[in-house]
Picture (cartoon, rainbow, N blue to C red):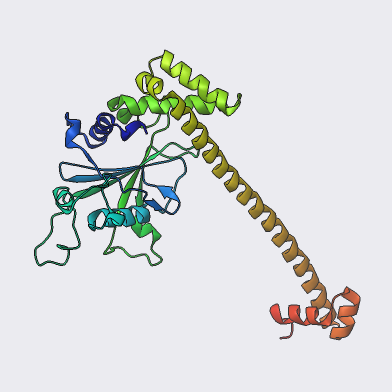
Length: 305
């Protein structure tokens, strides 16, 4: 939402790439309309100076991002003319416009002439609660079931931690990003002691008063509040699901451990009774188990050898 504005997006791109573009009109936003992969929507894709950048904002770390980016970039590179698969943000995009952006169409994809395509760049902006380094590389090859020194298909994505006090150099180069990190940090801090709606309202009011995203928050206050509440609730829900899954795993581990302990004790008793020459039926009776159960344990633990 914040970086949907061309001028702000250009400032963010300059900070990441080290470039110094001044004209926002040079930047072509070509986000795929309604493109959702694995339940999450791509935030932004845009083209400038034959460089195709795909930016994704996340509050949870997703190791599958390289694969999602692969699907997404494939659709961007291969854009059909049919309206149902229009690839540009503008629904009225034409084949000529697609060509202007350096993409391909159904007509020229199978031609003999080598195509020219823009070089891609994949960036994930992370601001979740789980600790992460300032910078982290995610690779498509990490998802392969077979690991090799060299792979014929690789895609790397850069994860940047944009929480407060992370990536300081980047934050100083992009004031909007720094202010956004400050705003998110305040929402989280106040949400620990206030109802979420009040926490968001307090963060917005303070930021406006202190000149943090002042113009943006004043102009979009209601929408920002609504989105902040939704995103925080979603982030909290994901954390709770993970915690529940972890606790379930611990409980399952305890149950499995108890079962293994009982089995080990039972097997030891069976072994001693077998050594004394007792029959299966007699052992089952003494241990209050079925004969089938005793025979099963004897086979499983090799007591019949």
